[in-house]
Image (cartoon, rainbow, N blue to C red):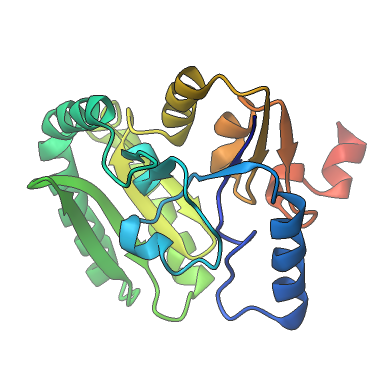
Length: 228
């Protein structure tokens, strides 16, 4: 059995895709058609439905907080671990939501700040700009990085970044932990990881092979490689 762990963002899914991106996504799906596709995504179950790909196996969602079985149900063992993590980080997440709101208002960044709950408990805080303004996201990232480093919650929370979104979530919720859990459940003959995001390097490292878009910052710049 070949298993492909795929972060669909900017690989199979693009915001306002060009014709070339649509073509590449279609060809990528063809390349992986013999593999059992497992999404590894920051999306939830509803968000995953927007992706034109057939995910009929396991799913790793919400940055590793949720593992969904092929029957469409949350894996009970993983759900218990997530609930324990949520309980331990509840206060930190509430304070992170307030800090994000403060950073947004103080600097007039016009970000959408959302505190997401699951099972009645805080799970993560997201910050997005309605027009994906990189300058605003960069500024919020710098200030929240300082807030984490200098505050009491640096051992409880972590900050992740995609080109269009910031996410604050518990340090113990990581996609690579969920991927490692599924590797133990499935025991595949061959594994392939696919992502365009630097924060996914840890789960790609668990796979036998990794596929990375040529323009991804995971590869570094040519100048970086020359200087290494």
